[in-house]
Length: 459
Image (tube, rainbow, N blue to C red; front, side):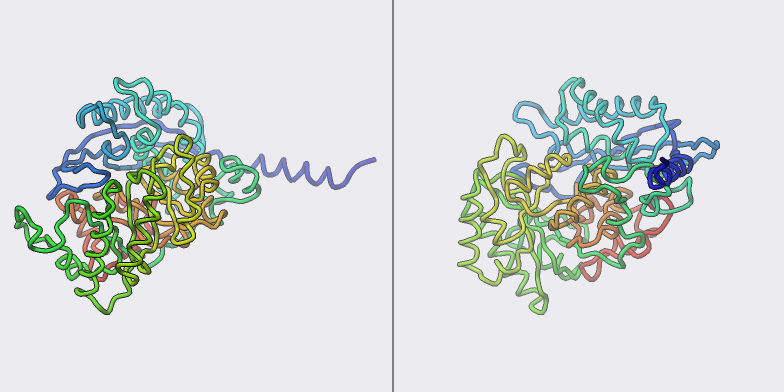
């Protein structure tokens, strides 16, 4: 006896298979490096950074019909953040990333399969990770993600341009052969990224101004004046950019300093713009020795400045990035006070799920971990009702356009850190005329409504 339901299911499956998107194949990949000096050192995680090397990637993709398109991706190689080491020098870890970039270029250029950019990235990640372990100074996974991110971005960019649409219009079943369960598990069966991504960008995104650990707060704190016409103290930056959100970099190994830093910044912010409903992020860059340090910090800040405590919107990566090795530091109690966000810890779905078990309640999305990962983690973060923000890697130029696009297309993002205007303005200069709303800030927000161009929309 014929089972009508089975027949209909078989016909539907055959129809889907026949119309399944075939994607593109990468035909060529080229890389180049640019070096920049910071206008002032940026101190985070106990280290002051004064330079950046940017990796630019250009690629060509082609579909089975023979149509081709070019793509571009760019990202600073943030070796101090992604490859911290007590034994290797800055030049050695940077050298490892440059070497890895060459290997990733070769791996990507030789990949023979057709697919959506997310399928290509998913398929190549094991080979990228293997290559990271084979460079002169073997690199950790986070470092691999940063190095691979402009390659992934270039492919997304080319894919969108081939179809004449924004990348954010390519995340539905008409472009993707597999649903989200292929990447994120059974919780996402039958769902596509388009469910979690805005096809049109929001008009603006709140800017989190970063105050580095060595940044002067007031004129008396300036040791050597830069004198380049840009602000040099916090009140000057607040007035110059019309700020209302501040990211505060903390030490994590000096409780009194951390507390005083927040109290001082809150006082300065209030005095400079008393009419503003200020919001703060406090970022320890995994330097807190344990969760008790964090809880003591929060309790004392609340005692010294109840107003400042209420203004803390979220806490970023308080303890070590290796969650498995640091699993005794449970964040449940701290997360009752404020969202606790993973940043350095977030390298894949497994790390996100483990963080949730340990009490983390938020996710920092970053262009420097790849467009593919940012989109997938944005979906997972929303599914699991987590706090969402977009963080920086002192991204200049095209990488800032990329980062701002993520922030403007992911629902619920609280704000974006974008500090290249503070530390790498020279790298931004060629981009100001094309994207004035991103590179000229007047009301504490990035203007993102215009980020609708084909691909990633930067070039």
